[in-house]
Every structure is written in structure tokens, then in C-alpha cells.
Image 1 (cartoon, rainbow, N blue to C red):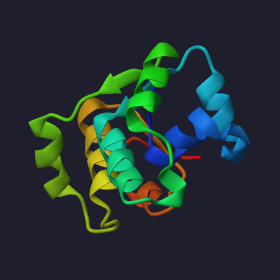
Image 2 (image 1 turned 45 degrees about the vertical axis):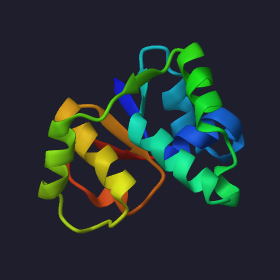
Image 3 (image 1 turned 30 degrees about the horizontal axis):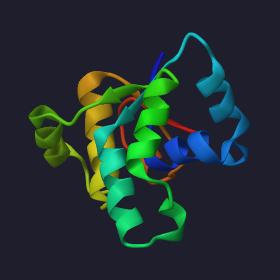
Length: 128
């Protein structure tokens, strides 16, 4: 299965694996699953890191290199993703999460999320 990790799951997998649920850990460790991270997540991390947020202390460039070195695939943002955001119901207002949802829908990749609001969207989304 192809899994797109939401930003928090991505951060936890990279630096705080004890915060992951057992279900999320099993999915991330299953060798048959292909793991993806979005440029949107790195954009979010870079912005929130520059604002001094305590939960975003990681350097986005270091994180990106580590993810690539560990076999994760990068999912760029393309115009079809941006256009798809307009079709989403207003369940969640966070623009980064909305982009991840749109990317999952367009690409047919399951979005793995720890956010209960994101999990309410229709489409390929799995709560973890």
C-alpha cells in the first residue's frame, strides 16, 4: 500500500516513534508499504520552525535528507493538487492538511493521519 504521512506522523516517525500508535508503527514497518512525504509537510515544518513553535524544532532540510536516505519518496505539489483543494468540504481549515488530503485523493495514496478532523474527509484516509 502507498502511504502519505501527515506532518505529525512524519515528525513522530522521524524523531519520536514512541508517539506513534501501534497501528501506525505496524503500517510504517511493513516492508510491502511504500512511504511518501509531501512537500507541503516540509513547507509547514519550515514555516512553523521559523516561528519558533516548540513542536516543530526540526530543520526541514535535515529531515528531508533523512527521509530520502531511509527510502521515503517525496511527493511534490502540482497544480491538480491545488485545484482539488477547492472541492473539499470545510471540515478542516488548515491549508497544509487540506493540501495533503487533496494529494491523497488525486494520487490515490492513503493518507495516514493522527488528526481526527482530517480523518473525517472522504477518500483514501486512514486514522492512526
